Figure 1 (cartoon, rainbow, N blue to C red):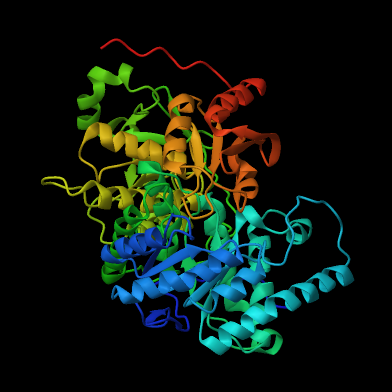
Figure 2: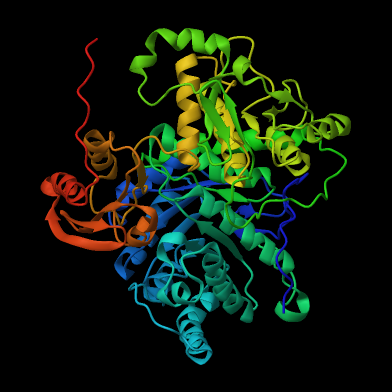
Length: 599
């Protein structure tokens, strides 16, 4: 038996070392920088549009471009797209995105530099069927998959084409679901099955991905994958399982919410030293993804450049890295506000911020400060100060504890060290930065990404009972950023939650316009989760946590779901948003929007 996986990356000093995989002239992993990639959104048969969108992406710094190839006909047209790009002087590597059809993959591999296959629907079934598989039946299914997958591996090896084995939480096969459930473990096992089949042919030019729309699930899956790869022994599985990792939060959505959710999932893993290439998936034009991805990489690179860690780096972490559980604490009361224990994570503001907002609190809706910092009176402790920690742990009553401003540790490492040593009675106040700006504010995007990465990563670790955003000077904006980060991390739901996929050539309606229309009529439904999916590839599965789903079923037609179950079919697109509202009413989740306030 393989040893139980151990996560060794809580306090990483550098990026995890991986083998290099070449994609045309771009190296992923090894000593290469973290690569930034994206995906075009147009119909693959529209050659001119595909060429132009790829050129636009390359112009803003996208290093690898993915194009969907849902059919053999689409895959064949990749030749024309490739030739047009090369004639225009663009050498950006091309990736074919394959779902369901091995025949399309075998055509696409002739024209591209990399193929992405999804183990959940490449030669496997997804019918939401429940059955028990005996070991013999399970192995028979693996043999069937080998017969379908082996020809692609052979072609990739012969042509020098790379591969991404890209598991998606929304499209695990029935076989995997029935044995492992809709879990990070199922995602990892699905990918490893295909990796073993590739290694049978001595093919190693592949990378892994473990994408999900829920950052907690995504983080847990990548951590488990890396721990499993680290634990695989040469005696049982062969040597050198250090394959590169592609990071992404799928269906992150748009606007500030999409950027925050991406920063939480991608940024937290980059902080752990995990990740060799990233894609930020926004329901926007693809060129808008690149500045976000580049800023995330730059932020984490800056952290590693100055990262200094306490002497004790082998302390056993007290929280399971592979499944979420909140750090248990005692309950504290400050005035009429309770925090810790099973209370929601509170939003703390400085006195100056409260004073700036006090005259309009009645107009801020759910964006309310819970507690003023002076009233909370947190105890500030440097996690390297053994005497201060011992004194805090000896206190007869619980205290709210934080880390002092000016601390020269990076935020995530500092709070992880604090949480491993602090008595669990004491709740923790998280700060997004230990160095609040004193001059004119910087651009909002780096601030947003730093706040979301630092606070979101810790909240997904289960650390934190209150948050203080001090990297953003504008009072209202800092308050909104705190709440939106709590929502994206699943720590405090105060508004409608949307799962919206990025466009691609499979999309059957305009995702940006449709998402805007749905938000316009449902944005007041606090706590309701709505999935907006352009096609059925990942739609039903990614709606596992959603209450309702709006999914492209055919050109001009929409299917509506409750959870993962389709309940309304082939609704004309012009009627579909109204029918979605009717469906929400039928299930008792609808409330009328409040009347707009008079200025």
